[in-house]
Length: 179
Image 1 (cartoon, rainbow, N blue to C red):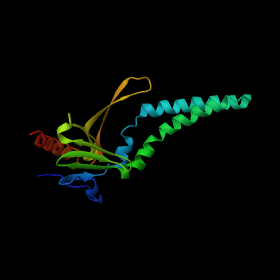
Image 2: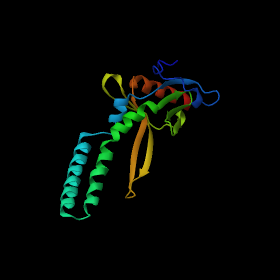
Image 3: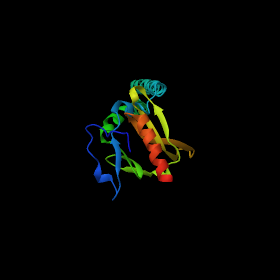
Image 4: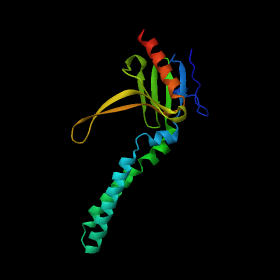
């Protein structure tokens, strides 16, 4: 029997269930925690420094009368888009929905549904935050970067309340699926 309580003010996502599948838990991420998951002060400082450099190039080349200032403009705009990522993630959080069923774990957004069968989950990792909010990671994705090097991304239920309980329930359901 599940010890989890579904998310408050989150409608029951029955449209995402397969026939005969039992919904155990569902919720949405905490927008603040979801937004700050990928953010770091070092990344922000680097991007601000890069933006300042780009602004300097743009300013000096504009006053020199060359068209090289257009290149400098790219050096200003690109880091600003990167700095805005937490804002975009904050706005995306209400459109993300997490589900845990008797058969699978699901991450649904307005554009995609990522589903992992419980018997196919290789690891479950808990990343505790403050006040019981944390991350339950269980998806490993190998992607190639621009240089062709492999990068490992971990994903799962990010920024959820009662993360410890969700992690325990996911492990329990995973054991049932494997037996």
